[in-house]
Amino acid sequence: MIAGVDGTRDGWVVAFADGWPCPSVPRMHLAATFAEVVTLTADCDAVAVDMPLGLPSRGDVRLCDELARKELAARSGPDVKAGSRVFLAPPREAVYGHGGSPKNFQTLHREHRGVGAGLPVWGIVPKLIEADEALCAQPALQDRIVECHPELAFARLAGQVLPSKHAAPGVMQRMALLSRHIAGFHDIALSGAFRSATVDDILDALVCLSTAAYLATEADISSPQSRRLPSQSVPRDARGLRMEIWF
Image (cartoon, rainbow, N blue to C red; front, side, top):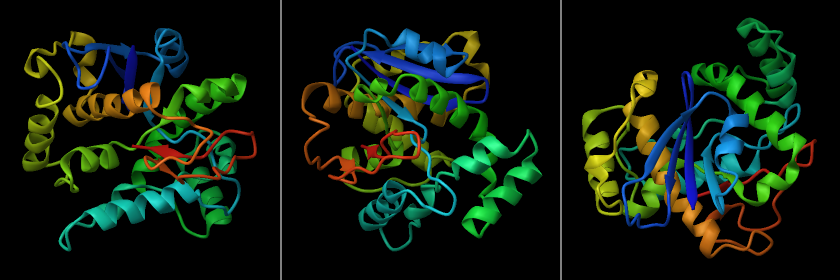
């Protein structure tokens, strides 16, 4: 069993499958917290999560974020600014020191990084904390719960970077691509609990299954990996968590 996970406004979208390509319709669940994600996926061999796992300190920038930007840029055409789809994980000091104030968060981010954070970053800070606290409490979870970047996963499956997921052409291409790998893709059912989830939340969780399957069946995290950034010598953050991106 594998799982793909993406954060959404009111929780975490969790897609369960028993392989990739998926031989049957994935089971979808909306978890309220990351702690619930950990519990729900306890029997999974691998879980791929679209959320930074492992946070940089002070002015440091994660190597995996820089490499992901370069990888996306290399796979995109001249008219697609794909590198910008990877935001830089904020400093741990800003994530934990803002006191609930977005202004304080930006001040701390600017103090340590020299620039403010992009607008989407503040919105995921609570989820960054949820995931970080869970993994810091149980670092061994990183042996089966890894960070995944959906844009890289989609680009690998498609052979190129797809148009923006925030516009109809990109959504349709992602759906067509997933339908070739997921049996019964169009039969996936969502309960009313998913009312706050967006289409791209669902699609990102589903494509994360492809990464989870690789980790469960082929990857050895202690060895160089072509589908991990960096491919070897993975840095650790101040709390000992690996800072890496799989796709």
